[in-house]
Length: 111
Length: 283
Ligand code: SF4
Ligand code: SF4
Image (spheres, rainbow over the protein chains, first blue to last red):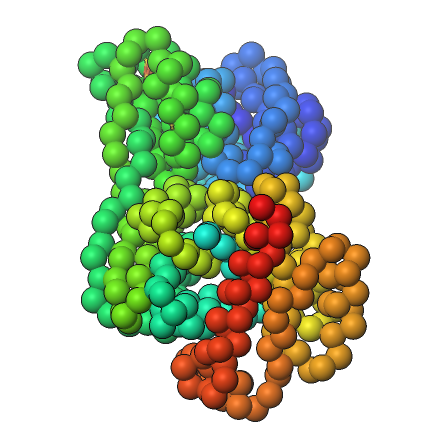
């Protein structure tokens, strides 16, 4: 399973980022392989439509779960339609912590 | 002659100038007043009356699910995020679409056709003898203000005297309003704070090759900052509207000073003559 976590930087030790569409990085964690792939978000300064465009990025990377702080309306529609489940990272500070909390079932589903 | 009334920012009295100018011209051979402030048109408040309405459609993609192979090309192409290609279908966010037509071009499966979607309306009325009022009204939540501005300008035609009331600021709808105009009246307040915004508006007009002049509104008699700005930028001061109790009282009740106060109809007619003189000087 591929879990996407929004982050301020690259890799498992990066700090989590509460914004979805304007997160600096998307870290894709492959829970079976135990690998982390970090993708720089080219849309941080884009004018509009960042929510659905970020959702497209998640679809392209095969993510089925998103862990972030908050998502906007259009992004929510796209994520829902794509069947991607969305969770808040709660008080987790890093990508690794957020992923661990998710796998233990300690995060609340927001979408 | 086509002139634009603009201002660097909101609240400077731009609408006051357009409405009074149009009132004065209505009685002097006629005028078409065009409300290009499509996000918040308000000239109809000065000139109520019955109107005809016409929709403003823009082309948006319609995707044929039979043909679509879910290849993802359209979603990656659209820089506005209006298309998201999922595993089983393509999602379309109409209010994000800028009608660029690109997705139709890039689709390798010929699955996209363009259909019309209404983003606003243009209303036309004749509230006074000699006055035709054309208003662009953008539907709520839409983003394509320039398309509605263009439709309003087209409905107004381009013969006779035309006054376009631009939206505040210098964003895309204002550029669209300025396009093809002969002159731009920039309304400013007699405070130094407004000058930065005025500067941007002056540059926008200059970039489009539209000559400009300034009307100083709510003048307290101490307009040094505005006047020296105009001198530096080679802008004529076309008119000064004082800040006095009578003028303020008429405006506060939503009235027209050209109609309700002695002498002001002539002064606004004179503003038009002044503009005409500057246009000729250039021609
Ligand atoms: S027409 Fe342009 S803006 Fe609209 S969906 Fe297609 S690519 Fe996106
Ligand atoms: S480009 Fe055409 S075929 Fe490809 S996903 Fe879009 S609509 Fe479908």
